[in-house]
Length: 122
Image (cartoon, rainbow, N blue to C red; front, side, top):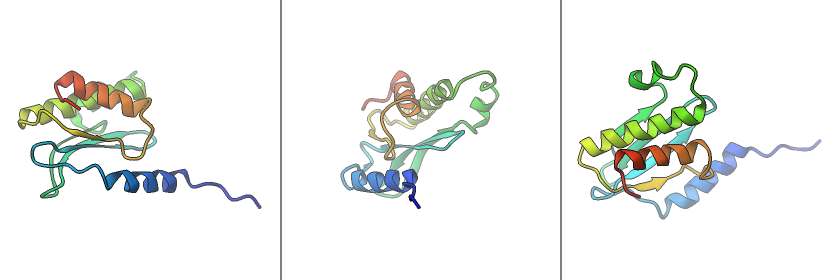
């Protein structure tokens, strides 16, 4: 019997490996992405005190009402813009991008594009 590769376990290992080098500080917090099958989540995190400064997802009330007829990529762009706007309101201008072990393409790239559009630099 052929065993299947657990893609999520491989992703988690990749994420753990890169997290050794990606650390969010007070001056430059970490923009973390989590992508599920139907939703996408983004958080701006200060790892020094383990505090989330800003967060957004496709389940937020502001975005959820606008999602009718939109693709997942368009929704990811909206999440990026919202988390970027919330982070800028808190005084965050520069972040470290943590793609969560996912490839930088598709929805992950759209979140980054939306965050840059909102004024975050990375």
